Length: 304
Ligand SMILES: O=P(O)(O)O[C@@H]1C[C@H](O)[C@@H](CO)O1
Ligand SMILES: Nc1nc2[nH]cnc2c(=O)[nH]1
Image 1 (cartoon, rainbow, N blue to C red):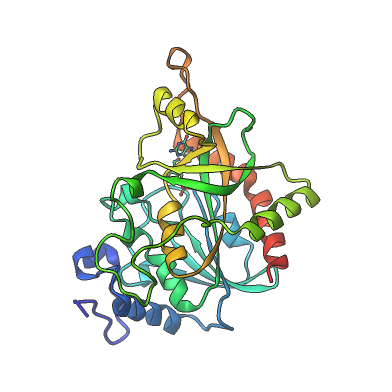
Image 2 (image 1 turned 135 degrees about the vertical axis):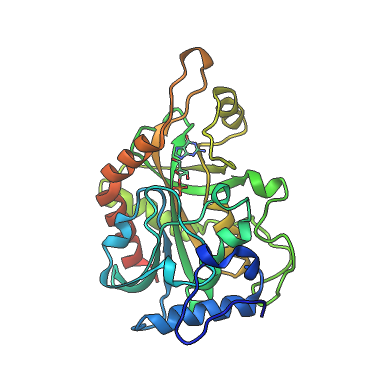
């Protein structure tokens, strides 16, 4: 173990610790982080479901019953969350009648030098805590012309732009305890969970779409020409997260359900361009908070 010091109850965190001190690909180092988490919460049972809240979607975490909240600042190796709308809490408790662990805030590669393994650390920790299913959410720009502001989109498949360019969380040493060296991403988003989500949305009268999510590197939003490019290749929504987490989850054999909240409509016309701001993304997420929360709760209620 390379310099991850957890002594006498003193818990250095990633902010003050320096990322070089901790290797997010090292299974044993991650086990130590997982143990620190375990020792700071009174686990009622093994969490079966993990949740990651997207930008402004932290309300999902606030819906958890009997919550135990652990700040990321108390988790060694976890970097800071610098994006507004990502609170930086790990929450344990009950949602939809199941014991869950929820990441109220995520790490985006553009925040952390494109170290995708570091950004996916919470997924590996949740795996070591025992989750079998991951529900991942994000805010995204709609590209499909049928999409409207505020729609929820079940992710059917993804285009992982950084991953295709060599920025994969699986690059580097592979510990087989996480899973195989080569991971097939042919069925990343579980078809039964997708069907369940579409049924739940219909029953609950929630506007729902299904489509392809693209993870761009960010943090800049796309130019009109880039939006047109992604539209041409079959994208439905554009974001800056999720795929690195899903890739790591699939390597560990975790089944995944993902959804996007369409917070803005991405524009393809440079002559009539529309500015996108993170503030409007957060406003859309706030408006959708209750809907997103009841959507996730109802899905969890019916997960076997
Ligand atoms: O964490 P997510 O993917 O929901 O955050 C999106 C993408 C950028 O981080 C940010 C842009 O507004 O929101
Ligand atoms: N890449 C990207 N991410 C987003 N997150 C919210 N809206 C957008 C968008 O239009 N593009």
